[in-house]
Amino acid sequence: MMSWLFAGLLGLSFLFGLLNGRMDAVSTAAVSDCAGAVTLTIQLAGVMCLWSGLMRIAQASGLTDKLSRLFGPLIRFLFRGLPAQSPAAKAIVMNLTANLLGLGNAATPLGIAAMKELEQIAPEKGTASDHMAMLVVLNTASLQLIPTTTAALRLANGSAAPMEILPAVWLASGVSICAGVFMAKILSRSYNRRVGRHG
Image (cartoon, rainbow, N blue to C red):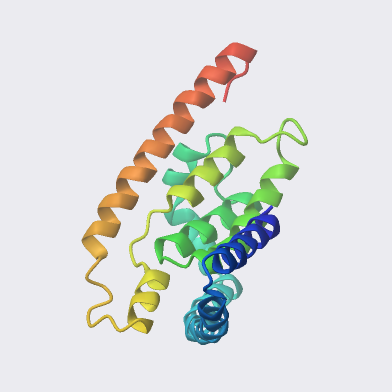
């Protein structure tokens, strides 16, 4: 889907450049922006590598077990019936930790691992369970205490105070995650009531 979207954007850019007689500007923008994209990727790679490495160390050192116990009450509330020390819960905890640190790219593989674990214990194979839907909500709303990726982007673009956005980030992500969790719980109860399930 994304490949079609990007192909469409490129095609429209060339079409409108041709229709407006601005193909020289399109060519210049394509070359300069490609170089800028590579530079930005390298700048972000350092931040991603650092935190991804720390996540691996946390897993190897047993910190994930401690985090699972720390997040136990939250996991029990959000994922009712899921054991706090299960592989799925541990993967969810690491995913939430990465999101709290604002590491969207580092959180992605952890989220995929958590989703695979949840798929194995889902009551209906091939259908998203309540737990899987909640994980999607948490990753979409993504409460961030430290917006690392955004701060890195701001720093790369010349911001003198890349972390000055913290209050706005906390407010926006806090409101979005509360609304998302609330709706997920309400819809889950409504659906389970209709099909006669308890969860």
